[in-house]
Image (cartoon, rainbow, N blue to C red; front, side, top):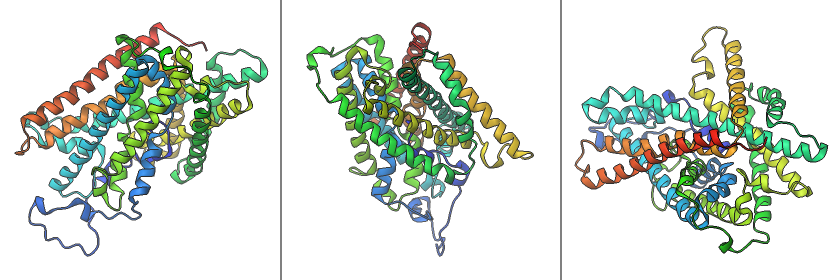
Length: 459
């Protein structure tokens, strides 16, 4: 998510699109370019503090290893043990390939337009200008759609985080004080610290929260593995396949967990050797391989351990009556709570609320009011739909399918529209990817909305 899944590197996901798309000429660079083919975007980038291949790999892993990994056992529950195993690998490969298409398209567009670096919205705009005449008028609209999809993803994950924190807090407090309050009460309790934390305007002030959340989350995942790998039942006790009706939930949840397209362009733009990002084996290939392995292990053994009792987040299955279990719940809850601020910052940037891009007069007052209203909105949505599982599936099926599965093949087709390499094989390949994205979008969204209506968790 994209940290669609709530990790610190998500802050790279969307910086100012205008700034990223502005040509930058390094000092002493001679303008002796005779044609578009001679222009090398990588040679024209002027990055102040470029990252090495290893540093970029670490950022990619941090960006994608979030609460989505804790939801993978629930995804396996919706698919079945072996169906979930195979399906997760297939979806992981498709997601990786779509990200690769996006990066490749961005490079070609930079080369043609003589732009050193480019952001998501500008990629969509320029790609539509490269396609058929009838689509050129939709270039701005396409950019706004990608922007909207990313905003919905960020705020949707924020809603899911409110749910997760409230449910974890409910578990801990009820164990110690023997009270039984609705989960919405706990959402109200966390509103004041949520507002206080998210009134921070400076990205530098969020860095300590990012470091704390990363440390907490790594510890939480390690403790979770300690529990789920202990005393495992036989694989024959779990169904290999669940049902076709539940597959869309599996798709949406897995996309939510695996899709990391929100960070790829800023990471690639900031590399010292950007050519190494999209090569095979390159940073993207190595990083996504590690992520797929970790997510498959968590989903497979988490569902094998708890079966039909698997919770929307595997940490909710950890027994509360042990000291280690109590520490785990509090640690992961705090990590998720702090990560909310990072996602919220990116959403504010996408909406143009940061840096006075919307409010010119009385900027501080209006920006603070906007932040408070949007924070309360995420809490309100979480309170109205206190069902974590369908929420994660809905975010993955709707926002991430649009940005991560539907747009990449469309943009790839438009970029190669007028070239000799636009052959039948590319048409069928992109049509297949587009079909997968559309099926996932509609079935996953409808199924998740139906889950909201017909099922509810005890709150």
